[in-house]
Length: 114
Length: 115
Image (tube, rainbow over all chains, first blue to last red; front, side, top):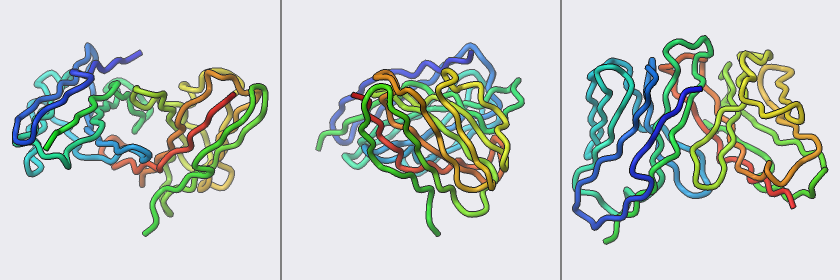
């Protein structure tokens, strides 16, 4: 069974601060995705990374996939109250045959105070 | 176009009862996934369909859980003899094809509470 350890579980910061969320596993993933989920809604995809060492930027968000494709990080620069939400990482098993079957981390609840 | 819809949005039932949860995927999406999300946790994979067939049902917790997708579109997740531990948000997602680079679009979920 694959596991994705996400940290920290909770993050409470002031507007304008930077933060990083980590997602780690002992397993290799063919792809790693980051989602954001609002209360009462389903997760919404932010980014997919597929190549070891890949870095993707989405405005103030920077995503990195580890060289060995076992870990990833999400960095937010100058956080804003609108960034508040649950952030989830999810990976697809590199050795599996069920394409699209995702293993999720337990999530990071981010609160940005004005 | 319309996104993934799920009905009902909330379901309260008593222990031992039978429930059905429905998912309407995005039109034309061949892959459909069911996940379960407990409070404070990330979603947990249950089953996925490619067309009408269940391609992987390894996440179903036991034989009280069953899902169908008879015409390759709408799917129903069925839970028999519900238990309090089944209380969770049941999420459905669909994608154009079941590949790692296809975006999975999630519905808002059905919140199931078993009393």
